[in-house]
Amino acid sequence: MHDTRPRRTFAVISHPDAGKSTLTEALALHARAINEAGAVHGKGDRKATVSDWMAMEKARGISITSAALQFVYRDHVINLVDTPGHSDFSEDTYRVLSAVDSAVMLVDAGKGLEPQTLKLFRVCALRGIPVITVINKWDRPGLAALELMDLIQEKINLRPTPLTWPVGEAGDFRGVLDRRTGEFVKYTRTAGGATRAPETRMAASEVGEDDAQVWAAAVEEHELLELDEADHDQGRFLAGETTPVMFASALQNFGVAQLLDLLLDLAPAPAATEGVDGTVRSPDDEFSAFVFKVQSGMNAAHRDRLAYARVVSGTFERGMVVTHAGTGRPFATKFAQAVFGRETTSVENAEPGDIIGLVNANALRVGDTVYVGDPVEYPPVPTFAPEHFVTASAGDIGRYKQFRRGIEQLDQEGVVQVLRSDLRGDQNPVLAAVGPMQFEVVEDRMTHEFNSPIRFHRLDYQLARRTDAAGAVALSGIRGVEVLQRSDGTHLALFVDQWRAKVVARDHPDVMLEALPAGGDVVAAK
Image 1 (cartoon, one colour):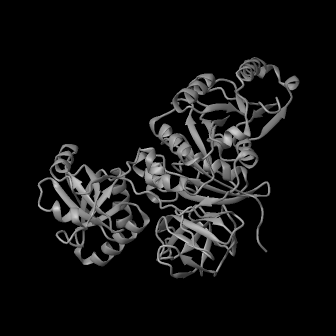
Image 2 (cartoon, one colour; image 1 turned 60 degrees about the horizontal axis):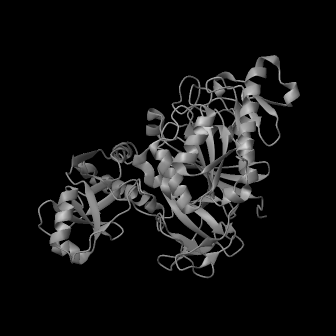
Image 3 (cartoon, one colour; image 1 turned 180 degrees about the vertical axis):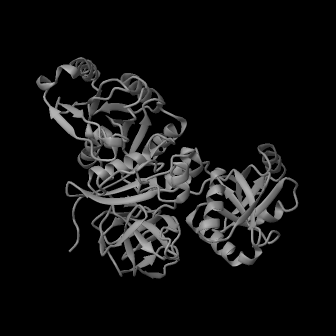
């Protein structure tokens, strides 16, 4: 039997340290997908979060790779993707945004709109992704609620329409005023926030003396918002003109239940998707899906490789034969998994909006489309311009086979870009990254996952331009320039600085030198 329950597929995004993984854990807890919430650092008696499963993530307390979780809430199937916040891993975050229908943007109550937050808001706007804003960490001192609304309006040109309003200033979080019902939702703390925080709903007339003063202040600000017509309008929200706002403390599990309900009530369901040639597939059409992520090393017991695919249309059935859009070849889906962090379970069927893991699908790469019936190919996932470059070599020459296999796997996952040339050979590939922390991930995974220590040698190049085979010949031997080939066949000309790139472009006007989308540019999301 096919599971025809409604789907909601969304990403949790934000600046680093705003609380994405903590919120992801809290959402799973409130949906009863887990019994106890973990901590990002796994401190004390609390386990680590389900979405931050890599050893390096646990040690540093940051998300390094995106993680998908599927669970059921209120008879809906939720597909949630936690994303890295650090700009060094922005490619991974933008890949996820190609696979979701909406986004939950976390804003730190104490820090307001940070640079990465602004970039992500703009990317969502360009992609037409509706955004729900959560003001997080309201249990800590921070900015005034009305000040935060002004910042959202001014800096990202989105009209904030709060659905809940905090009772108590930042640092004194008593609960929220539900602006749709007028009720006071009072929160009660639990030990360490590891379990569901009890919530009590009461009418205004039932508010106790202890909360009367802060409740009156919240009501007054709520009335100001009404006068300013800052009320939710579903059409404007879906059009990307407004952003519903909620106040929460993910660490204390305050406001999480309201967010889950909001996602089910307001977030859009899977819709028709356009292919590169204008072909449109609606959710009811024949099966199609695209790969937005490849991950290995999730199961320490054996070498696994999982291609994360977003189902765009039709019903997926395990074992069905699909067509690979890039090659036109048939592809048998023998093994498919539902994903919950690093845990996977076999899945027989999947519907539009679901994220499935195709096991050991070695033919699949990030951005690939698979389909049944009439051909369709969805837009490729962008590859950003690298700004950091190193040569890599095996730390132990006796483990060269493991070194080569590991580099190939990390290249296929998109952890780094791998560049080669006849001059350098396969033993010393050039690794190119958006941010230097990507090299740390490579070093950690090569050592612990592939059992092949690795050595890096920093190169002085600072930027890359796309060229072609003719450009590679024309630029050969020029000082301060090197042309290498990426694994997808793209030729990249590397330059020591902007000045050298400008001089070469001036002296060789016939050579193709195209700028690549930068990690912080919204053009990367096109």
